[in-house]
Amino acid sequence: QKEVEQNSGPLSVPEGAIASLNCTYSDRGSQSFFWYRQYSGKSPELIMFIYSNGDKEDGRFTAQLNKASQYVSLLIRDSQPSDSATYLCAVNGWTNAGKSTFGDGTTLTVKP
Amino acid sequence: DVKVTQSSRYLVKRTGEKVFLECVQDMDHENMFWYRQDPGLGLRLIYFSYDVKMKEKGDIPEGYSVSREKKERFSLILESASTNQTSMYLCASSNTTVGQDKYRDEKLFFGSGTQLSVL
Image (cartoon, rainbow over all chains, first blue to last red; front, side, top):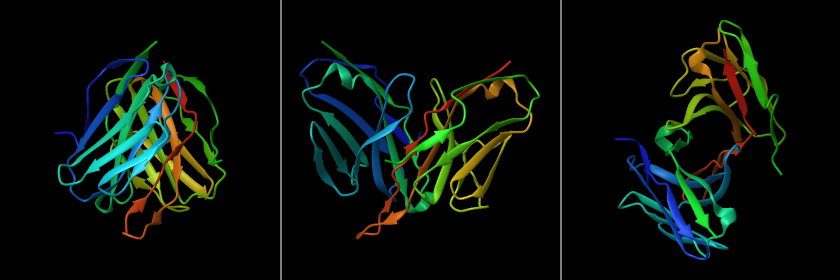
């Protein structure tokens, strides 16, 4: 079992819809959770981070964390073609001394 | 804005050559990382460093070494390049801050990457 698993994708949604990206992790000691966006041919950039159970909203993005279920998700409301990218889930914890463990990513396509 | 600069965007080398990939960050970050990214394999950590002259092995250190003589600079060295080291190499930096609930807050800032081809 991988330490961080994401929907295999690809995920395709129409413009204006809600895109839902999911991530599960195996290390119960994990404490910090990050979502990175990576456009084709570019490097990853941080878009959201969450530490506490519940929801965290930033504009059209909402990160959701459920530590009991070891589950973190990213919702993108009113999806735009410019949101088309690969989204990487990353997890940190005390046990791995600050090294981020990444999922393989989910590729999202938003169709006009 | 944090800037992480990698010396080359594209690099072509021959099998057996010694290859240096350079990375410089300008935000006084403590931590620096080297990842490689391959289709279907995701991001894999090669080496990282928490301080000058410090280095720790990541998940796939074989065939690589690193050097951190100054805080802002972290170099990845391929001692004898092989074709299976053809990949996208990404440098990243971060700071470690401990929040109120004692969480580690290590947001990574990536360089633009070096696409290395070993022929």
